[in-house]
Length: 117
Image (tube, rainbow, N blue to C red; front, side, top):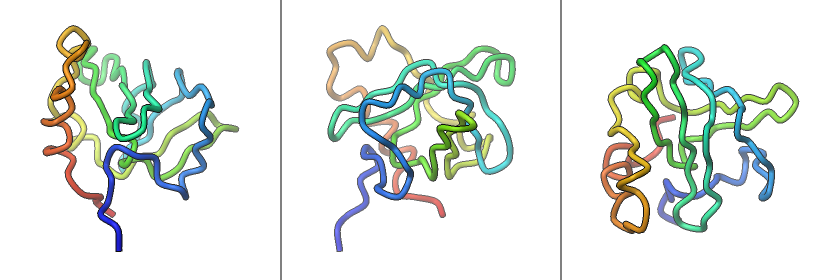
């Protein structure tokens, strides 16, 4: 049994490498939380950055790729296995701090941990 990798796309999500998902709506377990403003396909460090807009006053949140349940390319929606409150309470994404800092993802990994099914 392999350990769950929070930083990798799960094989059953429908993710295709090279697909541009920027602009897709993000659906939490309990409703829409925003739109994808950036995503990474880097092996071992794949994630989404979600612009929450007015929902939590323009905060940008980072979601590891392992939180994705399904990607619907027809509806342009990404479904994640967290609630809006779990996402709202996550550490804030700061692009300036991220640049060139390999340890930047550590607090997100600790926060999101293992999958919540």
